[in-house]
Amino acid sequence: MSKSTDELFKNVISHAKEYGFVFPSSEIYDGLSAVYDYGQNGSELKNNIKTYWWKSMVQLHENIVGIDAAIFMHPKTWKASGHVDGFSDPMIDNKDSKKRYRADQLLEDKIARYEKDGKKEKADALQTNLDDALKADNLVALRDLIIEHEIVCPVSGTRNWTDVRQFNLMFSTQMGAIADDADQIYLRPETAQGIFVNFLNVQKTGRMKIPFGIAQIGKAFRNEVIARQFIMRMREFEQMEMQFFVRPGEEMKWYAYWKEARLKWHLAVGTPAEKYRYHDHTKLAHYANAAVDIEFEFPFGFKEVEGIHSRTDFDLSQHQELSGKKLQYFDSEINQNYIPYVIETSIGLDRMFLLTMINAYEEQDLSEGDKKDSRVVLKLHPCLAPVKAAILPLTKKDGLPEKAREIMNRLKLDHNIIYEEKDSIGKRYRRQDAIGTPFCITVDHQSLEDNTVTIRHRDSMLQERVAIDQLDKIIGELVSWKNLLAK
Ligand code: ATP
Image: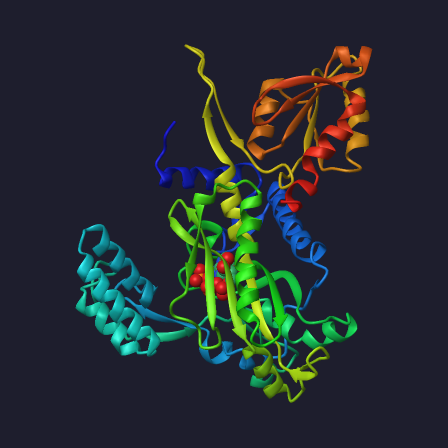
């Protein structure tokens, strides 16, 4: 069953909906663009990815602690971080279709088209001009490039463009009853700033010694103008970020450490290494002295999942200046006060979720001779699987449901377990395969006699007969976090 990657991606999206992983937000009102809800299986998978990250960061590192900062922050935070003045995208509208586009993305698409058509020189020249215009913040030059390269609106097909304007990506709202400017606050566009403003609180109360890190998982909001590719680019999304505070001058050593450590985390779940690559930034943000993306090969190409950034002392210095509060650390080993340097690791939880689904999704042809058969299986790592085992009585009578419930009631104290008695056993197996349940435990008449059950393994579909007493151990071993964390 070979499918084009496009088709495969579409199938993953519809599978995610059909099996309760991801729904469009407020779907009964036709949805809200680039906002999604996680369903009964999706939220389990998402929680498991969070747990994997949190345990790897906080539990395994003596010198990393976690916090949970509020989404709303003092508005000066975003002045200090540079988001009020600089967190914007260059936008252009087509006057005929009234559609809005990111000017740089229109040009990137054109470059890709030149490359596809073998016009390498043209592609390279445009890339250079685009880089120059972006670096100089030259909006007129961006528009000139769009005109010069005869870029048309994909909807209207015309070249009737407005000027290019900057469009800030932060959502704002009012706090309190009186709506004046002073009360305007923002929904955080990244979780990092909640860590920076708490740097001293955590350092002092946790008696943390440099180098140390603060980790956080939480929602972030960006008014993305072009939102596409399902949960790849959302307006409300979740980040898992860690800021690692180090002695100035030692940041490159730690940057190299985290660059390697983070890729290892990705590979431990069993993703083939060739699906990942590093993309080193050559153009650095003004506050960074090194930056790399960890990219995954999505069906629509290699795209960023996680960024590792050496942010110098930019954020803490800015907050020190705007708040008037000293944000320094006394390093007793060298007898010096300084503002620490920071290495950030920042991963998008939703993108991690998407790549996990894509990686796990497999359409298998199980036909034998004339007997047609197939299944869709999610080969999720057992630690990440939403449901760890399904308990299936072979029939609804003869005391089998009671026996099955007995097993269920014991196992559910440790794991997320499902009980199912509807439909044929084959259909029930297929439903569990489709949500990635590693084990199906079938209770039959023999179970009543000798206290054994069959246990079916998702990937191999092989069944074995085991004593009910053994189930805790078998399941416990396979879904133990140790399997992931020890790697
Ligand atoms: P991009 O270039 O794709 O817009 P970015 O460089 O702006 O991403 P960062 O600000 O570095 O992203 O955010 C860190 C991580 O947060 C990204 O690696 C990505 O996984 C995730 N992320 C950023 N924006 C979104 C979004 N709109 N929807 C989902 N995840 C996002």
